[in-house]
Image (cartoon, rainbow, N blue to C red; front, side):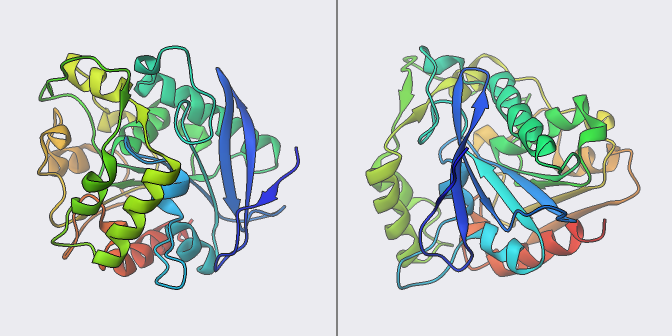
Length: 291
């Protein structure tokens, strides 16, 4: 496949497509080269693609890219858009894009990466992506070196009403501009809202239907790889974050002795795009580079 440059950024990136179970998955890599000792796959949340959530920068302004920060610290980074998100092919019914479907898409990217010579990368999941990554890790313990759960929505617990069952969700410009305004800078929130309105105006509503019907929670006792759980101090307060198990109990029940739980002040669910991001970037890189 031919890769094209993702544009001018601090770190060169390449955009391409990986074959998925229901069509092409838009994928981006940075720093990926033969023989990389440390590769991390970053899994998106419910509202933004991996490209927007992990590789966002303001032209002429600050760099909010977690991918850039990790590459600059010696890791290679890969992210992608789940089916129906961004430039990835959409299924006929967007409401089918649930956690099980997302795990299938992640497996396709992991298989592609293995074929490229990276059979055991690190895995990071943000918000809903934390549930996706953790449940993938439960099924595939030998495929992951180290795990980062960034403000994970671990599943189970509260049912979140979803009525009517619209196939697509559109938060709109105001949603992203107002999102956690007490933490994020106006520059970032305005630029992110502009980006989403122009490039990612809608996303599948499958995860909202799943949360309304009842989700399968991630099982801490089945996740055996070294794991970092990291949160902004204001995260986890929304109803969709209240899973079937509290985060401290989940952490204690992880069987590995190589684990850490970190709460970072001055951030919320989007802490890795907020001023708290610098401490989060350093903590993630330090943990992954221990391998």
